[in-house]
Image (cartoon, rainbow, N blue to C red):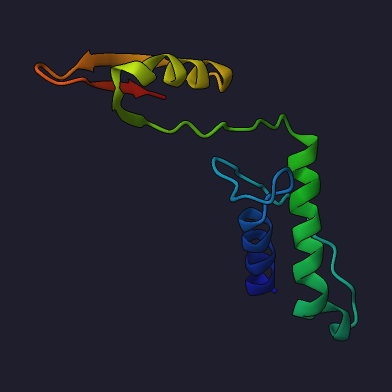
Length: 113
């Protein structure tokens, strides 16, 4: 039974309830379990999906949050294209934290996330 419960929790954690992504930073405490008296109803086919649904229900009842992925961009472009780069980044809520021009060339370097 313990192996089936662990498999159900792993299944639920690997396919999260909100976006079907891995859940991180989640602890699920099991306080009480009521099992059927008949052994045929205590197999993995019944316990694993039920444990997954319990995991999903617990997460939905708790205070949930999404984590937004943030990517580091290192962009090299000619000076003439810098305006387009800044425009594209601002449309996508990008934040430029470093910009410089290579000395003696027309290349511009932008670092953003």
